[in-house]
Structure formats: C-alpha cells, structure tokens
Length: 267
Image: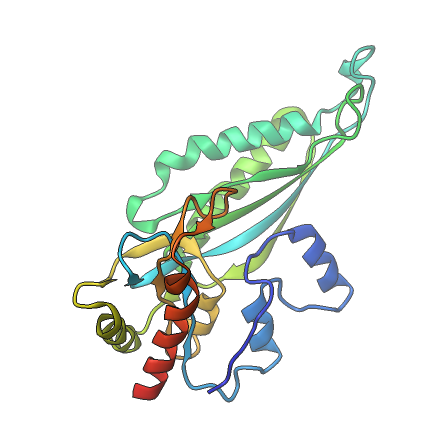
C-alpha cells in the first residue's frame, strides 16, 4: 500500500503555473498528471482517494466526473487617455466583455447530456482608471463529460473569444492547456468501498451512480489504472466558499481512513 500526498489538485493560478512550465520546473499544471509524468504511479495497480462532501447521505460513488481543458487568454488593445481621447485607444476590457457575453450566448447550444461548464474570470482588467485598458487576461475551464464533448465546446468558446477581439479591433491570444481527463470510477472498486461503508454505517448509507460536473485530476489516474474516487459527508456549506466547514469530525476525518483501510484489507 502506497500513501501519496499529491499537491496542486486544484488547477488554479494558471498563469503562474504555466510560467513554471516555461522555466522547466513542471510539465503539467495539475498534481496527479505531474505525478504520472514523473513515474510515481508506474508500480501502482489501482488507486483510491476520498473527497469530503456536503452530501446528505454518508457516502457516494458516482459513475463519472467531467474533464476539462484550460484556456489562458490575452486581449491586446491600445492605451489612450480615457477622458481626453478615448477614441485613440482600443479597449481590451470591452473586447473581453464582448467575448464573455458571446460565450454566454452560446450556452443554449450546449447539450444537457454533455454537462458542459464554462466559467471565465478576468485576472487582469486594466492598470489605471484613467487609461483605456490595453491588456486584459482571462482564465477559464471548458468542462465536459467526454473528451469529444470538451473538444466541440472549446471550438465554440475560441470562436466567441475571437469575436470579442474582432468587434473592438483588438488582438487576442488563446493558449489551450491540458486540464484533466474525465473521471470514470471502477464499478468493482466502488461496490467494494460501498460494502465497507454499509458495514460501518448501515444499509442505505451509500449512494451509487450519476455524473458530477466538477473535475478532478484523479480523472487522469482513472484513465491508466482502475480507480475509485468516492465522496463522504461531514461537511456543510457551499464548496469553494467561505461558509464551507466541518460539521461531523468523525465522518470528515476518521471514517474515510477506516473505509480505505477496510477496502485495502478486502483487496
């Protein structure tokens, strides 16, 4: 049994991490993809990890999670005095806003069964309030249930980004970076885990099936060896928010370790 603590599961601070790639310090921007590239999983036959959750049930094993690609986007305009001569400038912020609105207009074209998610943020929106913004940067994921769905959606997103630049006479640079592959849980490992949860908490304490629209670097692992990535409760609030907190310390801290140990014993 190999215990692994893998940093950087959350694919954030994209520009910073991409600079580390440029410096030769990383090959991939997510923890487990980098671990795979480094050969850390070469002698591993199957994998398991547990994510804390605000599920109403004790635990859950879904069939799959979204994968994603990541976009690092730079709009380039021309600076000018925002009050005295705005007509001399090209507003990169407006180009970015038109692009975001174009992405929003595309949402009705995404099929429900593909579970597409696109959620851009502006990481640089201008330097000074009295200067027409000449450089604006956006980071976004394009998530989907399958590689094919992601590929189709990202073409639409790229088109919207270029449209925003065209509308304002700006330039746009789009860098598409590898994100996560979709997660596909092993049904056999999932059932084994669920049996141990029910042994601990009783019949009906674990749910099975369904798809989650979030993404995880465990998806990369699941594409090279049998993997299970269950969820266990103990939390409350909205994930990735300030009100996320631990409600049940046993369920959050201890039970996941017991469940993994029991599953390892069975294996």
